[in-house]
Amino acid sequence: MNKENRIISVRDMEVKFQVRGNFLTAIRNVDLDLYDQEILAIVGESGSGKSVITKTFTGMLEANGWVSNGSIVYRPNKETLADEGAYFKEPIDVVNLQSPLISKDVIKSVVKINSEKIKELIKEIKELYKLNPKYNGLLEQKELKKIRLEKQIESEHNETILSGLNKQLQDLTEELKSSLLDEQTIASTKKINNEKFNVLLEKRKQQLNSLNENMSFTGNNRQANKIIKIEVKIKAIEETLKVINDDNHRDELIILKLENILKLEMDINKVKPLNIKSRMSISKITSMIEKFIETKVEWNVEEKEYAVKYFSSKEYLNRFENELQVICLSIIEKNTLDEDHFHNILVDWKRIKNTDVVNKINALKEIRQLRGKTISTIFQDPMTSLNPLLPVGFQITEVLRKQVGLNKKEAKQEAIELLRKVGIPNPEKRFKDIPGRYSGGMRQRVVIAIALAARPKILICDEPTTALDVTIQAQILDLIKELQTEYKFSVVFITHDLGVVAKIADRVAVMYAGQIVEVATAREIFDDPKHPYTWALLSSLPQLGKKGDDLFSIEGTPPSLFNEIVGDAFAPRNKYALELDYIKQPPMFKVSETHFAKTWLLDPRSPKVEKPSILNNLRKRIEEAEKVG
Image 1 (cartoon, rainbow, N blue to C red):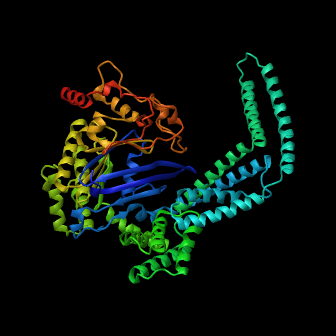
Image 2 (tube, rainbow, N blue to C red):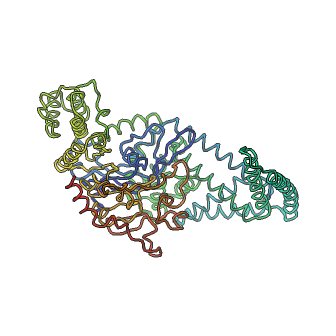
């Protein structure tokens, strides 16, 4: 598909929610494109993240949620650029637009909870060094800085920055090396700790033997509980002895804890807005760049050092700062820059350069322009989408007057025309009716009319047919397709019903546990699916059921999104899972120019596994089943 036709580009997106003193990662590392005038279906089980993705497009996440990483770039199409009334005429990053709106309570919670976790990890590191010492003094922060520098060097490609980072790493390594304890002191501490924990281990083993000998056949389980507790304590002591005697094991545990600290620090930096000092520095740097563009005069030594010092001194750069760094380094090393790129990031900078209060006020103004006029949403339950006390006509004209700027008379005429287009009979008479006088299907048609009132460029349909019966579902789907053809907007259709997908979608993205595991054209998904989860979803279609047989169901439950997911999230429920699926997350493999799937089964080294035979000739079988129905 032509990249020039992308209207929404999602890159490396991560969304988190603060829930009961913990963090739930609802979306993880999602990349997704929506093309101009296409219908993209997002499918998956409940809780897979389908609705969360589309809520980020319009800044409608719940107050306890935020986009913790990535970008969502909206690109206006040719019609929008030619439209004098369009607000957004240039590409915008919706994440930057929304960032000033992150709740202060969320920011406080992230800082507080992560800071407490960091303190606990530091305490655990100190305990490990007490068991098996290494340095003369408490150098956990310097070890943390060393790992941070190593990771920065690993991801950095610019020679100017690399040179400075390598120098810092070299100095720090020498400092840590000079602080190493002598072998005699280490051996003495190890000996004392060995004696202490070996005595304790022997004591626990004796307790265990005594409990096992006194085991009886009574129904009382107190003895068994005591045995389990003693066994847990024995394992903990054995692990402690391994730390005391195995330097490599100690170092591995400490590195793991230090890396966890880095992740927690990064989460804090992602959610916190730039402080006043950083804003002042960035203002100076942007002024230096603007001066360079105007005069074409090379930066002097002081200016170069100022820019390099700012970026190299920060422990974490947000995405805006990373892009600004690229511009600065291009000026320093090549005495040139991409002016269009700088212009784009300057637009983002204007959204976050003022005080938090001013940024929030401006963000609210822009988000109102985004909702309705640019991206509109149809929700799944028409019963709750409309105000039951206000006439239907008023609810449509309110949008037309506030968003489009029509007067009362013009708004009424346009509202009646919209009601006629969505199939409401006698719209002039039904204009003043309250929603209670409409059927469920007619209410959903009214919701569609409201969503289309401001002529959006993107329409999000969040399971709009779920609350309706099958006959009305078909009518609503046909209506959406007809209106999409007429108004030429793009559609993101959220559903768990693959039968609906077959009727309406151009492309399909399959979601599981907050990730897109397969994306392809609708024909490719039905004719040649590649991911085992897609196989499972398709196998559970009611149209494939036979009289007297149980419908196929996916065994097990999705993983908890509170925990870090290792490997392929679907592996525990996947009968085709490889050993590698439990260890390493698969990359997104390319099947064709329009088809990608996230499964190790597509690796050339994996065993060949065919899709279930029930999926052969799937499209034909669905069509036949629907004819019979």
